[in-house]
Image 1 (spheres, helix red, strand yellow):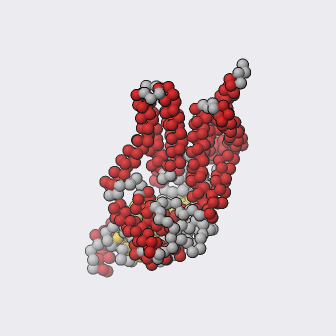
Image 2 (cartoon, helix red, strand yellow):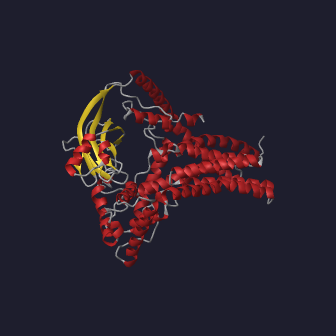
Image 3 (tube, one colour):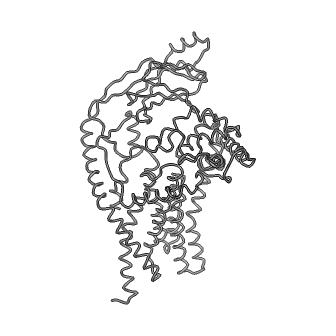
Length: 553
């Protein structure tokens, strides 16, 4: 517990993300498995309550991300071991069948909870699925798009532009997205350019799934889940029919998010798996950027603290600048509009403080100019405060699409279209100052964390290496003498979970997008710490077994 709680892997949260709770959820699942074993002979009520705990922990990890399958082999192994031990003591009795049923309860709870979430989505979105990207219609559409063969294969590009152009010709449904994909969504080509040049100039695999949903939404098909499902079903049918007729050169029909794997992916997969294994054993190089400061409005910083229950990076003690944008805007169709400021330098969205302002003068002016009484113009004034002060863009959008993108460095700050009327009156840049005392305290805390991280960086790789050697020796003893402990079974389950997730990430890294990263590997680090301690404890138990086998006093 001490090794986990001080581990640097749990520090350094820079944004609210599901990755940050995934390690804790993986620990909860294994805690439930351990309790299922230790309570296997206790009262049925205790045994059953821990089975319920495991079921809800499994549900939580399954719903947090889409690839929960990696934890299933470990669960099956330990549940099977508990059932085996129960059989040895109870034989085929009513007690055995009752406890076996309780062992299967976590999987039943998982299934029931997934149906419950799907039912809620059916009520609210009129689609019976846990999450949009795992629905049958979306998987069929994505699989159909990715089954079309590439004239010039390029890593990380599941549906390159030349393939999209050929699909436009045979699929009226996909042709509806043509202008959106090729003109309005060019921003999806940028995210990986700086780090990975291979997919630059096209939409990489890690982003294509979001670009596709973005395009379908802009085309108006996300007004309801049912409408989106109908579109995806039609898209899949048109592409698959074109493949059957020979209009497109295709691979076998598929319904999955995984790009088609070829021999070209084998070597990159092995390399990615090896890279991930080295990172797990040797550890990441823990660095804390002492120059890193928190950015955003006071409201966003307070919200971050409330959601994470954590502290902020040091606030800048020097005077910091903030930009305030004054103007007016309203939708001609009466829709609610939103604003977002983005930095061109970092390509990151900035949270801003937005104030609505009454503008009767705008209402009168527009009515005189157009002859139309737009009631929404009366409350069209806005005042936006953002931490972005240079090379900034203002995004204006409604609930379905982006209405305008305005470069705030230029003098052209008016938009008059069929959907939007907007005018930026003025932009001011002001100063505000943060508390130097809080800055000093935060930097003191970061220095402590840096020292703890340095200790881990030196000691943990040796502990992991020693644990692997201990596990190998334990494995050899099990093979030779058929003697094993629950800790050995638990360690095997942990190793199985680590290997399963690494394999998934390695294949994704080879075929879709770079996945050997801290965020995706985060749940493996606490599990490896648990394994590192228990493997050493286990070898001490085998030391006693060894001497008993040899009849050595």
